Amino acid sequence: MEKNINSKKLVQRMLFRLYTILLEVELFFLRLIGLLPFHCLRRFFYRTSGMKIGKGSTIHMYASFYNPSNIKIGEDTIIGEKAVLDGRDKLLIENHVDIASEVMIYNSEHDINDKNFAATFEPVIIEDYVFIGPRSIILPGVKIKKGAVIGAGAVVTRDVEEFSIVGGVPAKVIGERSLKDPSYKLGRAAWFR
Image 1 (cartoon, rainbow, N blue to C red):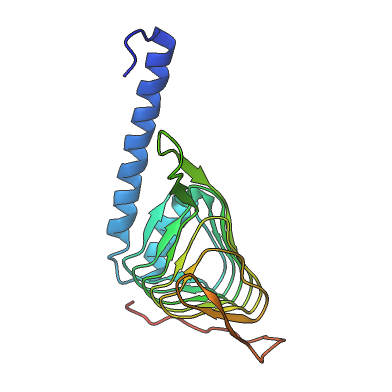
Image 2: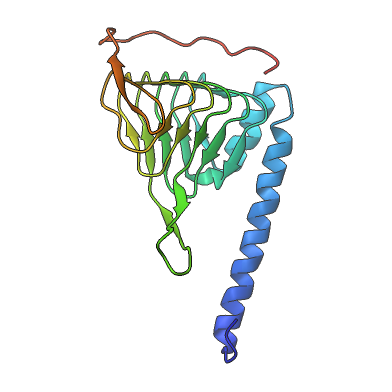
């Protein structure tokens, strides 16, 4: 706390604190919305919060968000139960992406070498036809290119090339996807998930 603070700085801090509180209330509301077992209602409220969700895409129950207005999801994409989607920087999830349950995608982290432990921000981009296995973690600044597969429980710390299969902690290439020209549709999501 500064001892000598001018009125302009004080007002700025108060407004920022108020903004932070309102954002936390919005995120809590969205978490409650995530309990509703109806895709159409959840999509409505998620879109109202500023999230862009393409045609035929769905987010299953119990999802958590940080700043949803920076999250853009393409068409025919399915996000599994209990996913964490971080919108503190740009999060782009393109078309026909299958994200399994309990996947965490972050685009903000603390700088452990900063004397104030300050947050850093970098966008995350997930291209078409990517599959991300259950309980995987995608860290800030990562680009997962078209058709890549992320194995269950992997921690992705750097870009993943097209049609690569990665796994482990940290994720490393463990194979290559033989399907090089995907054109499938993921289809309809389960009704009450």
